[in-house]
Amino acid sequence: MKKGTIVYIICYLSVICGNAQNSVAHNIVGTNHLIKSKVLNEERQIQIYLPVNYEDSKEHYPVLYVLDGQRLFNYAVSLSQSFKQFQLTPDFIVVGIHTEYPKRFQQLGEGKDTLIKYLSAELIPYLNKSFRTNNENLIFGWEYGASLVFNTMLSNPTLFDAHIMASAFPIMDAIDKLNDVSALPTNLYFSVSPDEYDVKHSAVKLDSLLTQKNIEGLQWSFLKLDIEQHRSTGYPTLYHGLRNYYKYYQEFEVNNLQKFINAGGIDYAYQYTKERAKRHGFSPELGLWSKFTIIRSAMRADDFYHFETLLNALNKKGFINELMYSNMGYVVSDFASFYEKHNHFKEAIDFYNLLLKKYPDSEKLLKKKARAISTIKKK
Image 1 (cartoon, helix red, strand yellow):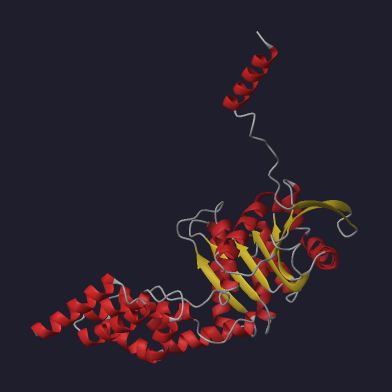
Image 2: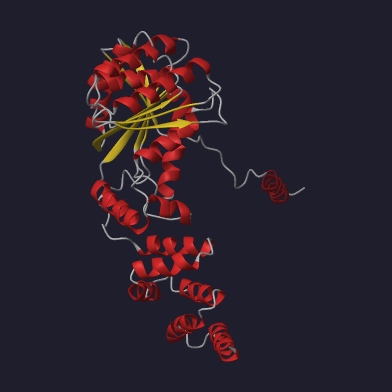
C-alpha cells in the first residue's frame, strides 16, 4: 500500500469519528478569586461574573451578592443573561460567596456577625475597588443564607439596596427586633412554601408584623410558593425578587385588559413610564410599543368599547400616524379588521385608504377595502 493511500485512510477515519473538526474546551462561568480575609482569618473563595459587554464599555454596574455561591452562583448568572436579553433588568455583576458544608451552618448562624462584618469591611470594598460598580448592591440568600440576609438588614440596613430571602431560617427571634425600628430605607422580598413548617411560621409572622407596623422607607413583598418545597424555593425567589426590585426597568407592556383597567388604565401607564424615567433614565414618554400593547389587549379581549376609548385616549390620529411611519405599520391593518368585525365599516375603509397610500399595489388591502365597501352598499 502506498504512503499516500495510508494518509488518506487515516484522514477519512478521523472525519468519520469527528476528530478532524471537533475540539473540546472547558466551559468556565466567571472567575474564581481567593481573597485573604483578616475578618474571617481565612482565604475565602469568591466567584465573580462580569456582564458580557463589561470589557468594551465604561459603564458602572449594580452588584448581586449570592450566598451559597457554590450552589446558586451559576443560576444567578443564567438569570442575569436572560434578563438582559429580554430587557427586564440592567446588566449586573454577580458575586458568589462560598459557604461550604458543614461550616455553612456555623458561619451563617452563630458566626453571622463576623460574616456581616466581612461583607461590609472587606468584600464590598474589594468589589468597588476592583471593578466598575455603581454602589447599587443586592443580596440573596436561601435558608440560613436568608437568615443572614435578614440580620444584615437589621444591623446595617443601608449596606444593600435590596434584600432577597428564600425560606429564611432561623429568624423567629430576630423578627421581634423590628418592633424597635421606625424606619428602614431599603427593599425586602421574601418567600416561603406552605409545606415548610417552622420556616412558614417565621414568614407569616414577618408578613403580619410588617403589615401592621408600616415601617417608613421599607418597600417589601411576600411571595407564597404553593408548588415549591424547601429545597426549591431559592430559584423562583431570586427570579421574582430581582423582577420586583427592577419592576420599572421593563418598557411598559399590557397583556391583560382587565388587569390594566384595574391598575388604573391610561393614568397607570403614564405613572409607570414617569417612574421608569426617574429610576433608570429612560424617556418619560409612553413608547410606541407600549401604546400598541394597550390597544392589543382590548382586541384580544374582543372589547370594542375599550378599543375605541383607549385609541382616543392615546390621540388616535397621532398614534396611527406614528405607527405608519414605523416598522409596525402592518398592525394598522389589524385595527381595520377589528373595526370590520364590529360593523364599523367606514372607520375600516379609512384605515385601508391610509394603508394603501403606503402600499398602493397590495392586492390584499384592495380586496379588504372592496369587501368593506360592498358590505356598506348591501346595508
